[in-house]
Length: 138
Image 1 (tube, helix red, strand yellow):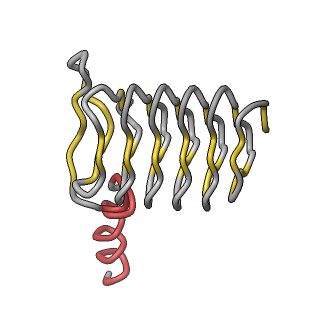
Image 2 (image 1 turned 30 degrees about the vertical axis):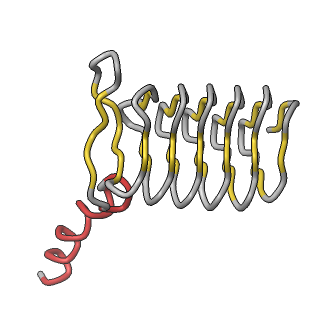
């Protein structure tokens, strides 16, 4: 019985956006409800956050960037310009995605990685500790 009570208590925390961090759901400029933004994260007014996306920890999303699908931006990551992170992509650690760069699919951008220009990273690609400014990686 104690195990069942513990499971019922823990499940909502595990399912909570940003691992239970305090925050609120973003309202996009078009009036639609966006995804979750932690109180410690920063999102500028022109950013579009999809309803299932998350911006956690001390991450920053600025400019006209889009975070959609089930994408997660966390830790000290930064996304700005016209960058788009979507589907199940994750940007974390101190990674940055900017200009017109795109990260999507199951891709992971982390460490000190940088995506800029017109680069596209998708599929199951893992990018870390280098800057990529053109091409497609999957």
